[in-house]
Length: 123
Image (cartoon, rainbow, N blue to C red; front, side, top):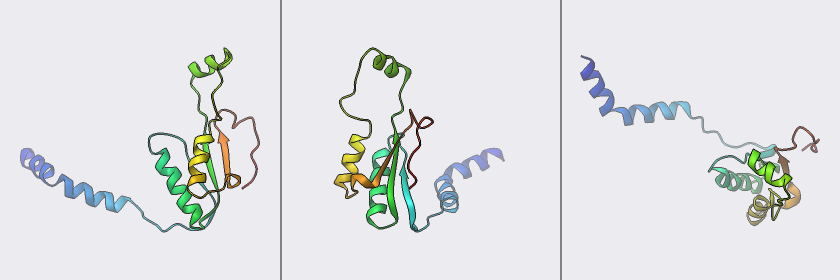
């Protein structure tokens, strides 16, 4: 009996999981907001920057907020020894957003390293 159930579930798992996924995903149209946030984590960061730029250009957001500058203990140690990066952590993201039509003055950069120490402007 259990073997038949297992075979059934295995045979129809693609259909079952597809239907469960369609039920769980809520796909809504974007609405106007003050800002769109692109979190700087994982391999999906650049697609998130592209989506943020599309939302900005579409008039759905007044600003784009990017976060980043997460450092490891090894990098902090190197910085204490005098290592300096060639450009600020946000420069590549600003260049990409600018290339995609988001003016630099419309981007708010929030550093994870000093988020607790600074006050950021209201959006």
